[in-house]
Image (tube, rainbow, N blue to C red):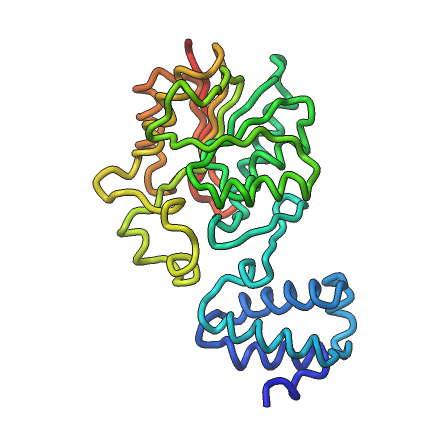
Length: 293
């Protein structure tokens, strides 16, 4: 029986490889196993690696059995555990929000470095489509003097974001709003910086994606029409052009297939000093631009 086979951390690793080989590759299985065991046993990855014979007790074995059965369905481990780490902070996650990605950490790092190195103080910023709140909350933690606002269309997502702000002791102003139909009644001020990681996955992209994304993560936060892949970028650029101070900054995470098209869109919207940046995997994944008004 699966339960009785897992008496040590090493047994868990072996069994996870056997059970999950049809869903994940070996490297992914190793990462999942380490993530689950370090959390369950409350130990570091270094200790887990150094002591593979660490014992697993009965309730832990039962929990591991439940976890592996859920993993076999393709359900993301972050949703199973109910949390993930982003930029060194813990965030609660559930199927109402996207799971934060490493490339978004790179975007956040770029923003922090830009703001800290700027001769012009950034006093206010807005995160559009905040989801779990990972961008807004992390920026507030590292740029405590900045007043941070965040909007999202989803009520459950905003509730998760508010919980994460409390969890990480970050003061963020959350507002429910649909950026595609935003009006003057939201009470938003003019900002020094706007950032967004909006929906950008096309139906064609969807065919290449793992089912643990397409089957579990919120589609409203992922997908755009095939015939209008830059829908959100166009709308947000227009909004930012009207709601940024002169020389204010706009940051986007983007679809790597539409880097140059997004640059051209921003030029057309009269943004200047546009920088298209690659992530650590050498993919064009983020953009910085400056308002001209």
